[in-house]
Length: 153
Ligand code: SF4
Ligand code: SF4
Ligand code: SF4
Image (cartoon, rainbow, N blue to C red):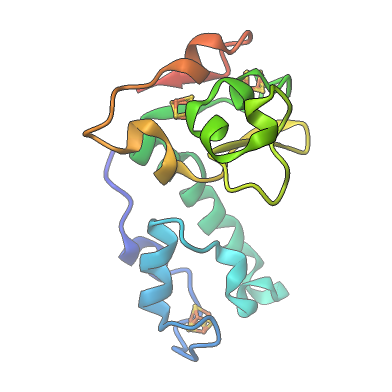
């Protein structure tokens, strides 16, 4: 599958370069790729005329970028929200006292995985052990998920 590019994302942006987001539209697209921001950070994309663009951006950015960065594929349909992956993730444990003690991380905690609306969400793919080539290859979340909702590329 072709790698997602910022030019691909740019075509769905308003292209006004108004800098209300703090960047030019191309800069915004670049930060979308790295997941530093989300499409909703552009105020124009929240307007009805851009609703299709917003949907497309979120579709492109969801599993595509997660998979590219981490090699993890998450099947939301199979996830039952049990939270096992959240509590076994080493990075979550390092970043969140609640996760370390076996509870779900607090919403202010800067974690990799969290439960959102009853489903697993990879909130910070860049912090996943698998995103760092010099780190060991972690498989904990995928191996311990009881419903096989997480698989590896
Ligand atoms: S706020 Fe939206 S339209 Fe304005 S520069 Fe940022 S991405 Fe472009
Ligand atoms: S991905 Fe698996 S382990 Fe994680 S919450 Fe969903 S069902 Fe549970
Ligand atoms: S692969 Fe490892 S570090 Fe990455 S989300 Fe899963 S458990 Fe956490």
